[in-house]
Length: 147
Image 1: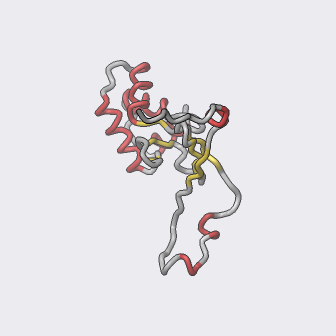
Image 2 (image 1 turned 120 degrees about the horizontal axis):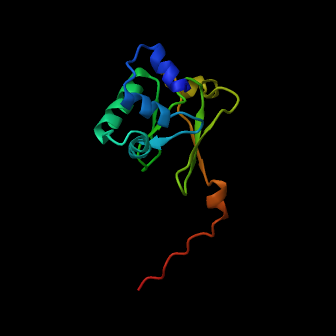
């Protein structure tokens, strides 16, 4: 059984066929699917699952704190089942691939007290940006000349 399914069951969450399939789709390392990607994968396992059910299930999982909602600039929100292991994200500016990273040190400790402006800081969301190996190997796009 997947880690996410175990966590959801441990919380007493009723595991319907639709919820089970969504949890199965989200199982694994470096999973950061959009809701539409979750729906497409879930529909392969359970063809009758509706898009609304997937969206509602994802929203419930986020509300429970078992799935993180990750936003990366202008791209669609993505869903990360790695909600209980501290990590940051590494995002490819070319293709949008997201990887979980666990740098050493604490981002909260790295914020000097003078830069906190009186805030009681409880969390930090850090995103590193760059190009994945595949995008870095591609030649730079050459803009077309103006007519």
